[in-house]
Length: 87
Image: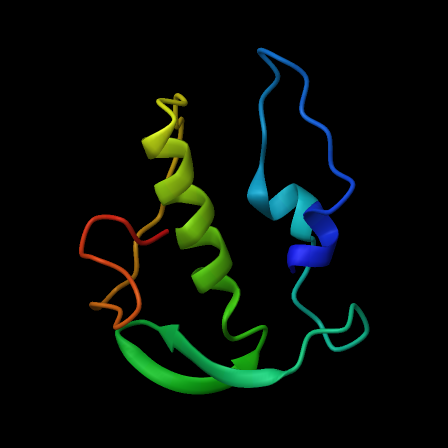
């Protein structure tokens, strides 16, 4: 996922969508099977691990004072980020 952001440029005042940049989580797009959260359960699914990147980005946006218009937290706590910083 991080590769999709390497050349991404965001103009001042522009709106950013993580899902629009990352695109569909499919094997054809290069995503692999990994553990995913789904309806409160941990299941094997394509694109697992996406939320670690989105959560890191979300925490960074909060740190720099960016306006976040929408966020969807996990359905359960994550081991790699503090509660409330997941996305």
